[in-house]
Image 1: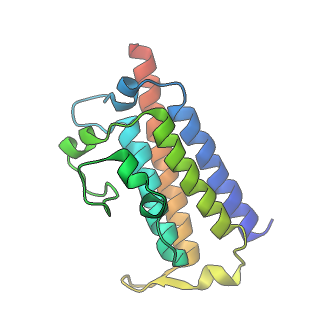
Image 2: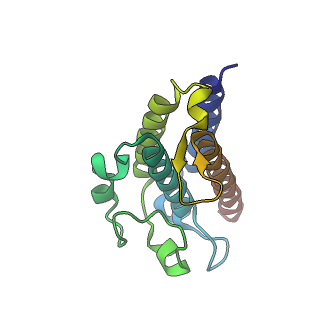
Length: 169
């Protein structure tokens, strides 16, 4: 298996998990919280998508889907356009309300852009430095694995919340 194939598979698994966590849920179910300060499915999926969009766009030197394709306006969230959810308060988490089709539409658009980028990545590309703000500097390989890890964690959290919501239902 080549690096690009491995990355395509990893991101494909995230897409499956995101869809399984979101499909068929009402707006109220998507914004339900297991306790007053917990993250909702809507926030988790929006956040993991924003992180993927932000980090992949930066690593490949392209614009973000969020702004370039108008998703920011469609969501109409009360945050700065560059917000990704990092450091959000409980009140900000509660502000992320979006129907399943909007969440999945944005996720799928980011997923498609991600696949376009990683589909041609070579082993040599993975050593390219994409962020010099850290010591050691961050390579493309490290950045992509970081995105995969974060997305998997949040998709798993969304699946857990879905299970709780469905049991309460």
